[in-house]
Every structure is written in C-alpha cells, then in structure tokens.
Image (cartoon, rainbow, N blue to C red; front, side, top):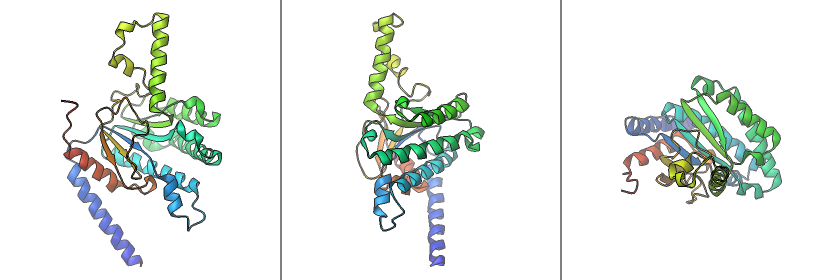
Length: 264
C-alpha cells in the first residue's frame, strides 16, 4: 500500500513539473481572483468521519489559501483576490459563522508574522464592509493591513463581508457625498473616477485577468461585478479544500490558449 501511495505521489510530481514547464514561458495572468467555494460540501462528502464537521472544511480551505501564497509567488502572480465570505453569508447558521470568524482571525494573526509576507513585500488588504465583522477580527485585520501597507511587490486581497453590489453602492455614495459637498463636479464623474472609489482602488491593477470558481458551480455570486467586465472565467469541478497546484497550472494553461479581445 505504501509503495503504491509513493508511486502515485511520484507521478503527481512529474505531472506537476510537466504542467509548470508548459506554462512558465507563456503570458501569465497578473491578477488572479478566486471564488473559494465548496468547503462545506467537501466536509459533508467525508461525513463517514464524524470529526470532519463544517469547521474542518473551512479549516482545510484556509490551509489551501496558505499554500496558494507560495504557488502564486512561484509563478510571479502579483495580484490575488480571494472571495472568502460574502455579505449574504451572514444568513448562515450562527455557529458556522462563529467558526469562520475564529478561523479567519487566527489566519490573519498568522499572516502578521509570516516571514513570506515580509520577505516578499506582500500587501494584505481586506475588501468589503469590514465594520460588519467581530471587533476582534477587525483588530487582527487592521494589524496586518498596517504592517504591510507600504509593501508593493505582491497584493493579496481577501473579500470578506463582501458584495459586488454593495461595493458599487458604497462607491456611488462616496461620490455623491463629494459632489454634494462641492469636492467633485458631477461632470467629472467618469469610469476612471468611479474606479478610484472601489474597494480595490489601492491596487495599480484592479481588473482580474482570470477568475476561477471551484466546486463546479458556474456563477459569479456578485464577485467583483465592476472589475470582472473582461475577465476570463474558469469553473473548476473541484472543491476548494481539494484544490492543488496542478489545478492552478491547468487554469493558467487554459488562460494562455484564450484570445482576449476586450470587446474589439
């Protein structure tokens, strides 16, 4: 059994290297956004193991996010935006929400001291209505954002308490307030102006080149509605906790074979 297991691992590594060689010299997406879907279904599929509750699904998903940090740095993907918790997710079971918030707080605290973040100058930012989150989580987020605010080699965005419609509404409210106060003329409100008030305005490249959704679902669920106008969409039939480097490499390979027209 062990010999067979090692053989499978060896074959996986060979395939992984082969995929990497296929994509390494091609045009790679600068900004990848991912909808991290399928944590609960992953846990439910393993219900024969009673200790694998929803909590473990979210915990395993958080572990994959940490691995993704290494993979994207290896591939020199500068901008990453992850859809982790939507405004609609607040309607879930309160116990599950509490577990998610606890895991998120632990991981943001861990990012604060992660040597990879500081060595590679990764700016960490949470986009969304952060005021809706528990105070302790807000503090953890503020700490890691403050510690990395001057980094600009990589950008890691976590869409938490996020909604695409909410983002557009919040930007419109800010612009309306500035117009009302005389700080901004309504004639000067253009698409470029509007983008300055989106949650992603801290990044020099707001629009994702590629958006991946795991779990087999094929919808955007309100993710980056403004920024995704010309993003390439890929829907993968794998739950997020099972996401591997080969899934990322395959997605990049598909991206490299697409002809991007941007409406032309």
